[in-house]
Length: 392
Image (tube, rainbow, N blue to C red; front, side, top):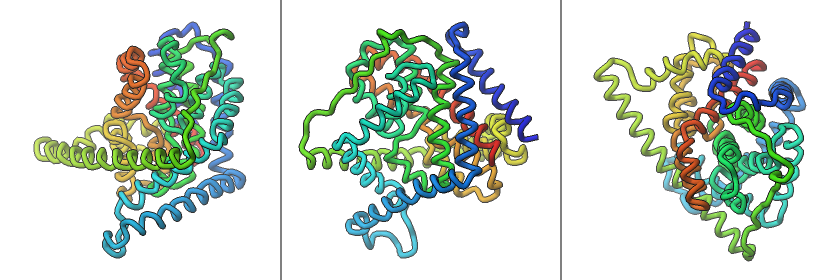
């Protein structure tokens, strides 16, 4: 039965994407089939084989070590502030972002990351049928972040037509930056984080290829990566440490605001209608949760978490998921994979602002297709959850 539901779910995702496509005649089906098959194979390997378990355990152990090293610095500065036996969210989940950001800076400075990103992108471009720039951007987004990635291609931003610009922005919203992966792993199981990262990479291309199809000529298929200004090692290190701290502070501020506002709205709805706002949204998203493989009796609860991620952000939704003890392991896995992306309303402003800071006219273009961007990125999350749900 789960295979039938998965097939219906896939048809629903592709149907909803197809009917909103900008140019159905230009959709290329061969790369789509290749990427869907790759998604299924990768989901099986990561979730159902000893090789996948080994890879995920290794990836998770790296971040566990990084979080342990981060704790050394955090305890030095903040030791004694927390009550004994308690683990404040800001200290244990957000502040380690500073250390991981510093490590990313070192790998950037030593040219290791640019090399990896560029050549993985080139290999991907052979599979997805898109340009080198789009493939590079998808990999770079997953490592550098949804704002920082545009700086690395700022020379080309002003030259891109709307359709190629959309694909770049869709990649940035569908993936998550490596600097906050460690934070996710403290809130949901590492294997779901890793699986979502891999599936979203291909899912972004699949949805963009249907929603926003186009062809890139050989003359247009040029990748120009902007080299960072020459800095000393310690200048660079200080900059990345401060960038990581800013991310932690911004996420903390957004959590304070969103959690409080959702509580306020829930209180108003509860007193007026006898049902919370999240429960109401849960009914709206329940059919999607069911098509992702969630049992119907848990679909409303799962749908409310999915809606929270879209309206607020993934951190708020992950907190809700960790507090919901009535869900089955399968539902937790499916919803966890859905949550690992930047597909929410606040990301529209973040991405549009990042592009506008580099090129005002193109920033305005991004703002205009912002809702379409969110729609596409949400379809990517649903697609990844459906594929993963087959093997959970």
